[in-house]
Length: 595
Image (cartoon, rainbow, N blue to C red; front, side, top):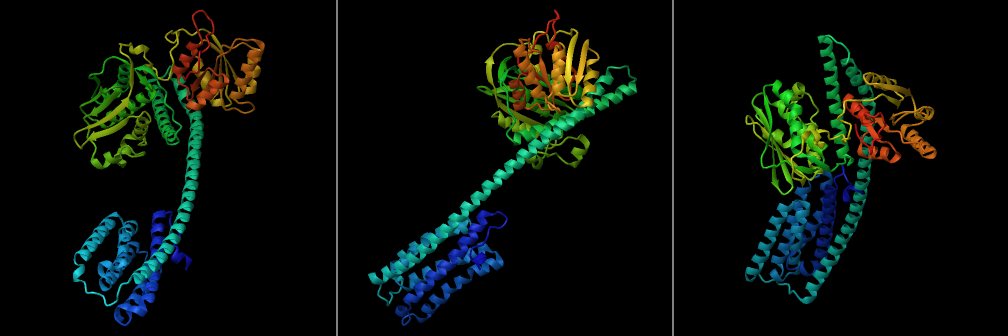
């Protein structure tokens, strides 16, 4: 009985439950108000209006069956329409029977549009409101044509009716409002709890992805590192092709891992943007050059077009902008079979830059275009099978544009090619021509140093701490081509002991190790240097954990840079050059640096 009168929340639908409860209470209240009013009026009306008096008692009594019908059928809108129509008919019948426009019950027509709006919908509320206005106007206009009641409507009768109706209606609505408020508070608490659980689940997912990424990067470091080392040895043509296939497949897998991590960081609100000065022209040129070989292999022309954009330096995140352009250009090359691809760059307003990546491919139909920026969306299963990929690239592009207060949109139609339009607010800081070779855009992940251009690496004594044997083998293989002496240890405690017993030009420190991790080892080395007034030895974090907050933490404990896993041979060379000079003096890295 309780669930019938006050239906419980089903499937978390608060509005549906509120409608059911309001309808149930309203049905009972209407029946009670009508029944009490009819019984009180019965001694006065029975002699003159016997039929109407009996109907006035039976009609309201039918409303008591409302909760039963609702529980059996669940037809909220149908029952609501019947209830509102019945109330309208009862009020109109009483007004036309007794008093016409003078009948005080007529005023309760005002509440019907509100009930219709809440119980059925706003369109029904508008229709009911129009009907109420028309009813009021008609009764007042034709009040003289309504037969005069034989029952004299004295002030006492009107006051009695008003008092009865208002008291009962007020009590029922107050009870409903109190119950509804209590249920809404409970619903809000449930929603808050559900949101907290969802946030926890999202954080757990991000932590899991970060952990899985770290675990995947360790074997990938072995695969790519050994493949690179193998490329430096004499190989036959077939062997070189096989090694190149291993390397390209590994790079493809790393791109997928990075896409998944980027999306998870955006969803968790953990993706941070950097803002620095860079050469916009050089960035676009580099992005086009990166994909030029793949385009020419398919017989395509890929070219940047600079409209009203002068040679200038702007302020923004070059790495993320390059990521957006690389994604769009890569897709254009992938899905275009003939013709050309252009990357138009221009200014559309003050500090607003627009990029248009236009291709002459097959185009995209409207259905796909509507969901193209949704994660894991691809044109078809055939597209996924033929071209590969996860369908995350465009979703990441959209999220990155949103983070940078910009926007991305698509203009396309089947057979007419596609144009992806990116608009980003990039503040101009200097109007001058900049050599792209010295642009931040040409190496967005690396801060230049005076000796990075030098091809000479002097003999260095390097200490490397890593608990994973594969990583140690990879590092040894990659350093074989350089004049370095490498000392390997398996944990942070051994690294501290080795540092104390010898002189090292560079320490490569894994972050996660048993016995003593890399962070604790770095703190101890820095404390010993300070205590014994020794010069600081460059310490580089050798890790797959390279999120912004993690890099900031490495810097805070005294590390000088980060070498990301899988280890890139080129970035390893940059690192070695940064700690070596022609005079044979160690040159500590000035601030935390990514390699």
